[in-house]
Length: 170
Image 1 (spheres, one colour):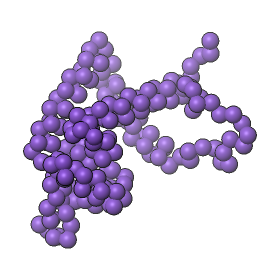
Image 2: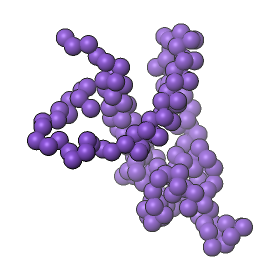
Image 3: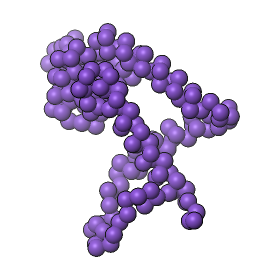
């Protein structure tokens, strides 16, 4: 059996977290409103965390163009989950807010998620929880900076080499 390197352990954990969170957010989106997809629901999570935002600010937070965000908001508004009103400081801009129904659902969801995280970490020591609370956000911030600017593959691609897609091959 080969020894797992730190890098392989981290990539395996990242792959597992990606699958878990994508599945989780897909289920959450559908529970907010039947047929709602996680991509379309993503503005709701940002608005819940950040509060009312201009469409341009929301697009920046999501890393999407304004046209895509506007399409998401059209669907969310038709489902009664967001409201758009002209910005009082610049009536050309629109400010997006959660409706009371969406706010209540997301408040409940936050409480349930915190309970799930406490359950996951229940048998961890105080020190392990504190260290995890420091290192995961740090890794996420650094990862966004480093992975966000890294090329998706090696220069020129695999050039005839077989590249594995299984665990530990990234």
